[in-house]
Length: 316
Image (cartoon, one colour):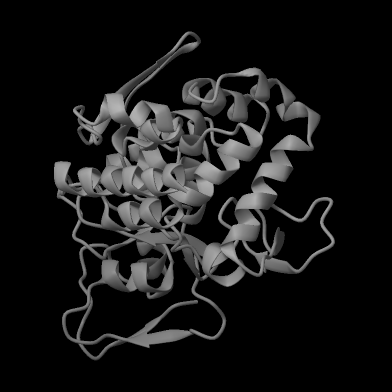
């Protein structure tokens, strides 16, 4: 019992140290870590999967528990329906209407994540690693095909090091690490023998939505085209092109940013739009997910013409 109480106190110390050390860290991430760190430690104790890896994957895959998938199905690790006889949740991910596992509670998601790794031979080599080798696990998960994102391992490592999650991997490390900074600066340099990805900033996973069948996110404080391009594995030039934006201005918070190409026409149920006060041809194109040049073409307007208040514009 004394050991259990000590463990709880140490975990609490770790969390509040993180909170005190850096107010710049994302509050949703800190809240998620505080809520689920003991679940992660339980999985490490029973299955030798590093707590840091479990939490980093949970944070990344679930958007700190804020994604549609995690809220609708308690699925915090993005595990799909292969070899699954339980409840299912269908959601547009890499493809339309993909099938994901649905759980009654978050605990079930954590336990199934461990079982998923344990019962698949392609992950077997990971369990030879020490539970403190979070870098080996991060690169190993990517190598074994857990995610298609080529920067997946680097993102996990960035989260682990920025939020000090590696200190959770062994309770014995707590006493010797209390004097160290639990949370580091907002970016880390990650190197691998196969090459380097340079500096990867700590980030918040953005919730992806759709309009007109085009994927977009809403910009958060501190976002830029560069950080969003890094998160979604594309060039800044391409991201700007998707959004008809050649400016060098900072992104305003809450701005809609498309992460795939806009369409030539609006949806069938949106044939036209009456211009209201303050709207521009650009803002209208962003609202409906259509290319601004196509909006001009649909209405036979020269590109130097602005949106006229009260005018009805064709959208398809």
